[in-house]
Amino acid sequence: MDLLSLLLGVILILNIALGISIIFLERKDASATWAWLMVLLFIPIAGFILYLIFGKPISNRRIFTWDTKSRLGVKTAVQAQLRALEEGSFEFKHESIAEYEDIVYLHLRNDDAIYTQDNTIDIYTDGTKKFDALIQDLERASDHIHLLYYIIRSDNLGKRIADVLIKKANEGVEVRMLYDDMGSRRLGRKYIKRLRHAGVQVESFFPPKIPMFNFKINYRNHRKLAIIDGKIGYIGGFNIGDEYLGRKKKFGYWRDTHLRIYGDAVRNMQTRYILDWNQASRNDILYEDRYYDARKQGDAGVQIVSSGPDSDWEQIKNGYIKMIMSAKEYIYIQTPYFIPDESLRDVLRIAVLSGIDVKIMIPNKPDHPFVYWATLSNIGDMLNAGAEAYIYQNGFLHAKTIIVDGKIASVGTANIDVRSFRLNFEVNAFLYDRGITQELEQAFFSDMEASTQMSKKLYENRLIGIRFKESISRLISPVL
Image (cartoon, rainbow, N blue to C red; front, side):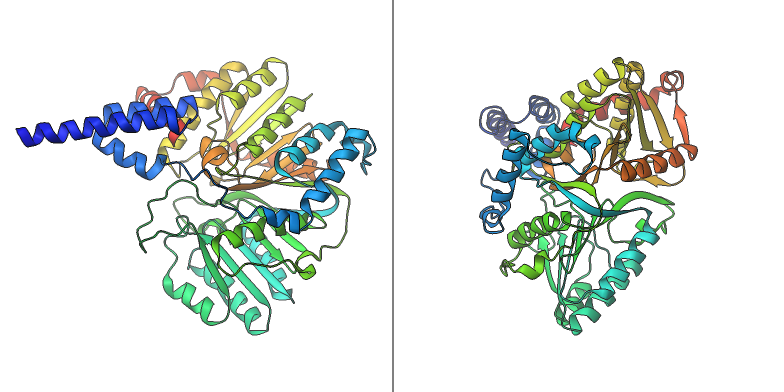
């Protein structure tokens, strides 16, 4: 009995100490603070362990070598664009885009996101077509290949990509592959060894100190980037694995959105890659002109915006909010997870109540149950405000797309949830082009035909069991 009392006393002291740390030292968001305090109160032992896995904050130091930006001339270019916008001398290729100069200015100030307006963009919503295009570009590479994916699997698609990388490395092309250690935890050692043996440089992001035991659930690199010869860049939602080709029964057809960019925006994607690679590897990528050989083509405006837990600002979320605030007619959203924080929820609700047509599309099945039930709960809030909600039925919807008034859009890796806004490293392309935006809009309308509309009445008649799951999931949503 004395031993049990001692153990309970130790647990109580640890919980109190952890609670004090959460409140006074880590200065988390209020909702996340209360969520963790509730976890510690109701499940003290398991809660303590869960906090060590999920809640431990990242170091306050910036994990990236940000002086690289100065060496690459990013700071100088950003200051020049800021001055031009402030003085009213910045020239937009399309006058219709000039009305969004405040969004351009925001990303320049908030993320050093240089605005480029000489890009050609191809949109891929089908995994087979996206990877056929990527592999074709990889096979044409003559100088270097830079890949970064959250998930890389050693299945058929993974092996197909590996075969091309090995072939190009044998031809003398400089090949680098960066993957997230948690997202790609099932990636086999033989796969990596085969690549390295051929001369491919392979690194993992935030690997564990003890091999095979990675408990760093948070602060993962969720970005997906591919840069070929500094000229072509890919960005979007597809990872490397057979399920992204629709070959897994669990998910069925995989509906995602990915971009192929040719133009000056590739320079900014390359900078993002170099920063990520140099954090993960001891073999830094040094500045060389060949990495920045982008050719001007087209007239689409693009800003490449990054965010992560090492930043003081939630750059991508702020961009979403600014886009929504600019809407005059409509807002179309596709996301696998819809768990907005209070600020984003309020701005969407205000848009609906102001007469803006807000349509939100989510999948009909979960890949993470708690996240899915929390999503449904938030969809209920939007239905009450007057928004329209659509449940995609043709497989799994993984696209992260926002479209506003047929003029601007965002496509990238960030979901609408706390994990993407605060806990993971993400990257999005903010697009300023009527043609590209309307092409994304047509894809949205096509997906509506493969969806069922969730009416307010249908939502209110949901089963008691679903209501219970929603309540629990919404309570813990700040820490999901």
